[in-house]
Length: 248
Ligand code: PGA
View (tube, rainbow, N blue to C red):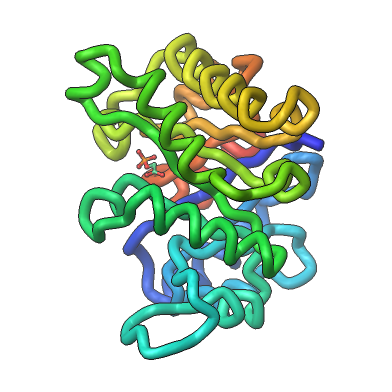
């Protein structure tokens, strides 16, 4: 079933010492509730965070993964390596990876399948850039990204996936989609999922909004009917800001 889900994407920020300091402060102010909370940290911080978050209910996420189990892929990290540490979620196809590291719809799909097979929840990111928004391509483009990401994934696995709608023009720019725009796009995604699968499956899939979410705008976004949570970048780096979003 769908659940409220607030996730922090640290991107390439924080050393291990800084990650531990965050965790210690955050644990003090965090109270478990029916809101799922996860931190997506750089790989080298995951072990320390697994120790810090033990027994708190705060989930651990990675920001990327390779789709092969093992092999000659210098510099890559595999699904079993993440599992061993206790990672429960993994971002796939973040726009920064699509833009700077040649992530394609095909690799997104392969990564999602590899994660699902191992019981790790993929958080699949989709979203249009400013040019596509200005030319009103966003509905078609995002629906296509969803269809490509889900290709060959059976309904029972699809129901476990999280999808994050992140308009590229709103990421790290301080510009957010309006709640109506964000809600509309999450509905486009759910409609596409219903088309691919069925209403029951589509209804189970958690859909987040991401792009300059902060304490000041979290409530109006999270109040929208189609939006189940948020993927938070910049504002997840500070415990006090992040907890405000979680507590909303
Ligand atoms: P932002 O990043 O909140 O800093 O815009 C969101 C994201 O990239 O997931």
